[in-house]
Length: 292
Length: 281
Image (cartoon, rainbow over all chains, first blue to last red; front, side, top):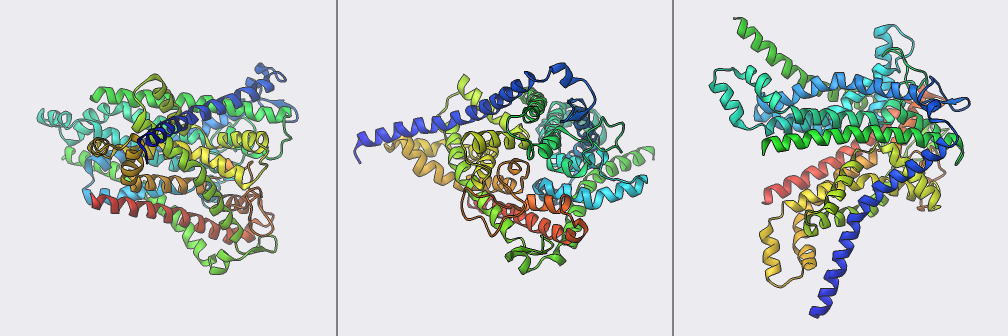
């Protein structure tokens, strides 16, 4: 091959690779534009004030996102109440206490937990956890916010554990040694020095876990009962934003108000997860700056 | 004495949390496998469903999932690897590179159902692909893109710079360096990432809901513009929408076993590649 031809191939591929880089921007821009455009079509028909107030999501009468947002918040916050302490304590155990052999067993366990498809976890919500909850609390239907919270906690755990563990490992050894040298014991060092030093990373872990819980569809669709009213407690059936889209998008005619309404609630979900993820990134960066 | 009790309590809390996480996995696997394995048979894997899904097998769902994952691979791997090559081999720190990286991080955080809506608006409606395995595969491809880019870039980063410099010093162009040295050397790492991403994609349900999946099709999907059956969707329908839910429960368990086994096999393959590669270095 002549030098000239090789140079041409080199240049062509340079631009081809660069083009592939632009795809990511185009994809994010495309998703954003799609949501914005369809939401705009929705808000020309329905007043935003009606959308954000009211207490009913009923495509025949009224589009109010409030019950969906409250439902989404219920299961997401509920899942974090379970997953955050469990995840951070497990990460602390893994990085500070567990012998190497135990670590070698636990790593694949967490990877396996992360690999289980969400639909299989939702299935267990129906056949195992649902009947369990209804028996325990003496209620008829075990498909409710509590069920969804527990399942989402299980799904968020691998994310929270992995990132928390990285954050704890990133705390310099000198911190621990200084604390021990001052006479603090192992536990005081862990709870008063190591974990506080890792805090930004732990917050990042929680944010990413929360983002995962907010965006999960199949598990909540199968396990929470999907009643579209504002829930009063964790034993009420709820219907999240993701589940609403999943249930209704399949049947709605193209470019009707209802169709646009589903894009509008998707846009709200997009904004919520975006803010959560950006917060997570902010804290992850703070951890990095702190240690460098 | 008081101290000793406190230490024990602390230790119990931490190891107890860990034990609880393991218990979750144990319960999930025990329940699904103990009830699913008895219903699983060779017939279940290679026969068509009969009697309104109450008997027979799930062959079309298995074929559908494999076909779907294949289309996802064909689309996501070339673009994902090319993007990672650009970021790691060509791009210098600049505003543009920062925007690309920020886009990738944000794409990874977008809920999968929103990818489903995007696939519906773009592939099904705007491109007129209809609800088909092609639309669904491309949608899953978009969803997989950020993960493939991230894992590929990690693999490329592990190739020492001295190898690139040696090749360039011998007179090879940058593209030849990438094609003949960097990519072959990074292949095991790239492959691990790709397989792990595909195992996630194979288990996804939300993005394919409106882009082409069907509860029942006659025969198997043979063309890319047909609708298809998929394992995760099949499990969802059997456990929530079927009119004889109690009767098909064993079939739902068996479907869950097949789905989880498929995902685990992919994970084990990825693990083996990673492990072999590690011992080589």
